[in-house]
Structure formats: C-alpha cells, structure tokens
Image (tube, rainbow, N blue to C red; front, side, top):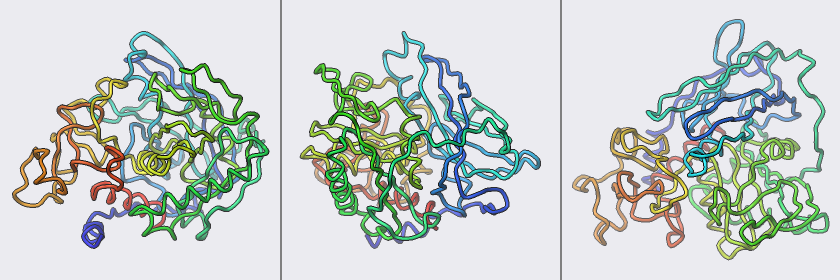
Amino acid sequence: MKRLFIVFLFATSVYAQIEFNKYFLPKTLRLDYYHNGDKNTEVVSFDKLIEEPYWGGSYKNLVDTLKYGNYYLHVYDDSTGTEIYSRGFSDLFQEWQTTEEAKHVFRSMQGSVVMPFPKNKIRIQIDRRNRKNIFEKKFEYTVDPKSYFIIKEQKVKYPSFRVLYSGLSEKKLDIVIVPEGYTKEEMSKFKEDCKKFVGYLFSYSPFKEFKNKFNIWGIEAPSIEDGTDIPGENVWKNTLLNSHFYTFGSERYLMTTDYFLVRDVASNAPYDQIFILVNTSKYGGGAVYNYYTLSAIDNRLSKQIIVHEFGHGLAGLADEYGNDNTYQDMYPTDVEPWEPNLTTLVNFSSKWEKLIKPGTPIPTPPTEKYKNTIGVFEGGGYVEKGVYRPTLNSIMNSFSSNEFNEVCKLAIIKIIDFYTN
C-alpha cells in the first residue's frame, strides 16, 4: 500500500470551489425524466421536479472534475451562467442500447438526477458521450425554485437508522442501504445484513484504510413478499423495488428499472451512493456508475459480489473480463474508454502508463512471468480483442482474485477524496 499512497499524492485532483451557501440550501432538488429511443436514437423528456429533505453530498466539491460516466449533469446559475454543480453518471438506458433487443425495439426507461436545492433560478443541462467519447447536449431545462410545480410531498416515508456513522454527511461519503425482498417480519434480518455489508466492504483495500470517511444508513422499507423475481424460472415476487434477475437476458444480472421508486425510498436518508441489498441466495447483482449498486446478500459469494459491484457503482470501474455476449460494441476500439481500468491504447498516457515498470512489454503477454505485474493485458470490457486491462487478474475480472489491482485502488481513493476532502 505504501507505493499506492505515494502515487495517490500525485494523482489527486484540484477541485473547483463553489460557495455552497451562496447558491444552495441543504436539501435536494431531484429532476426525473425519461430516456426514449432504440439502438441509434435517444430523446430525453421531462417528467417532474421533487424537493427532498436531505443533501448528503459535499458542500465543497460541487463541480465534478473527474469526468467519469456516459452522461454529465451541468447546473448553471441562470443569471450569471456560472456552473455551480456538476456530476458524471451512467444509467441502464445506454447499456440497453448495446444489446440485441435495442436493434428492434423502441422503449422508454426512467432517469433521474439530483443536486443541492438552488436558492435562485438555474439551468439544468444533461450531456451524453457520443461514439467518439465527446459530450453532446441531450436535455436542457430551466428551474425556478419558487415554482409551485415542484413536488414537496415525500412519496414514501420509512424510518432510517445508522449502520456506520463517522461524522457530518457533508464531509463523509454516505451510502444508503435500501432493502429489497425483506418482509416486515424480516427487518431484523435486514439490520443484521447491513452489519454484514459493513464487514464485507471494509475488509478490502482501499476501503478499510478509509473507513472513517464513510457514513452508512439503512432504510426500514419492507416488501410484501421476500426474495426477488426470477423470470427464467417463472418466479415472481411482490417486492418493494420490483428487482429481477435476467436483466437484458443475462441470468446473473440482478437489477430494477423502477428508478424513480429507488430514489423515493433512498430519499429517507442523506446519501451519495445507493446500495440495494436483495434478500436472496441466488448468485447475482449489478451496478451502474452513480446510479445504484445491487447485490444478493445470502449467496456464498456475496462478499465478492458486493465489493465487485460497488467498484462499478462508486468508482466507475469497468469489468475486466471478456467473452460476454450480452453487450455489443460497448467499447469502440478507436476511442479511449472513460473507465479508469480499461484502455484501447488510443490514449494510454491518460491511464496507468506511469505505473508500468520499465521493460514491461505493451501489450503484456499473459504468462507466469507477469502474473503479479501492472501491464496491459488484452481482454476486457466483455471482449477478447482490442480492449486491455491492467493486470492478469483482479476482483474486477474474476473471483479467483480477491482484491482490487493497484489501478482500481487508485481510482477508488480518488473518488473517496472527491466526496470527503
């Protein structure tokens, strides 16, 4: 870890400072919208505005300089044009567009962004990366915070509880854990599973070294039935968030498309990240960067699932394995991926080039000699050719490895720093 922290000192970004109290109140403005389209088209349409009671984010680092994610939220002060808040994110729609179904189906999917509640009129803009990784404007909307059309009622109210508390939310990275498939009688199990989550997450580096920078909250939100939907086995359960296996036809991909409802339940506590624990023993989970993370809790591999998926949700880490036919052309080989742990060698100097020891061949052969070496190994991002990963193996590649590689650790530390410093 010593080398890791030395490198981190040189990798830390300088963040633009916006005076929070000048522009914002300590609560949340949420904008819900719909993605509409197919493989080649996307139209973003407005749905509603909601005022929520907590703001869990930083009061300092309001402008996102990391530029991770397939989408980017800009918030501008309307009178001066000053950018006062921004955040990169991804969501299920752009994933779906790379599936076979998107070639033949036009559909709508829910989207949502949150920001501190503005004192004055703002302009919201959502950009999306095109196939060349250049951001293009997809949506624009002006908000008057005094508008009576902003919904002030909290749609669902549930008690929250502290799982881990380290200090004020504005100075910590807050995770809200939402239960899925726990009945009212199983809320005590959910609380024990939240403790299990803490034990799992903070047994891994670099999370364990930064445990005092986290708050974790639980929401006592029961389902009518326990478990989750398993469409491939004709199992259907009446659960809080309508989660299901077989997302996009992949049996292990456990997600929900009811994103508005996820946000509704999460709003009962301050949060930076949403983690959904699913009361099932079936292997599965999923995550999308700055969207939500979801995992089965009772599988024998749940510890690894939770940590792997949170790498996606928190730090935008990509899967480092190939040979997955769920997605098609997710990573064009003529552009550099934005994810910190993949490269196409188009702009490798922007990635982990400085971590490679002199004499290491690029690409790096997958031999025993380079088993524990930072290099450039072909295969990643669901394909075997043209996309490269930092190490022969890591927990973002397979569970035969039980740790993040150094490139992933640095990316996670950078994100923790952004939320807490």
